[in-house]
Length: 166
Image 1 (cartoon, rainbow, N blue to C red):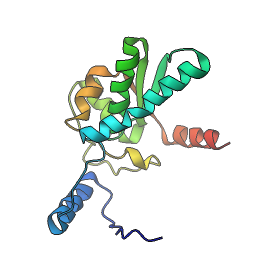
Image 2: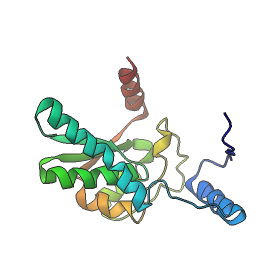
Image 3: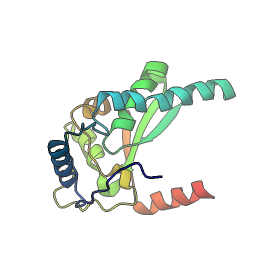
């Protein structure tokens, strides 16, 4: 079935994606909903951890000790961090993980200020959903509520992906 979507290819940079989205909004009147900075998206992402906590309680009669969440733009990480802190407080350790080649969140967390990808970063990673960066809505949540951020190599990502598939 065709739903009338148009795929638009752009350069592999956050700036190119943002510029093209802006152009489409301006020329078509479309509404842009940011995939990680929109508060409604952040809230929706948090339902993942609400369900996880409920299922762990129901199936194991326990609470989570720690959760590892992937981080790119921070929508998934922020929404789930808010939900986990609301349900479990400081009893749960919240760790974010990102590719070492896309380490803007780890560098931001370590330096205590919002950073983007290094200018020479080619955004080369198999974790293509994590090529974006934290923004003004997600950064404060990560900064204030996350316990730590780990980076992983491409080799580790591929090994983990293979393990999950087996």
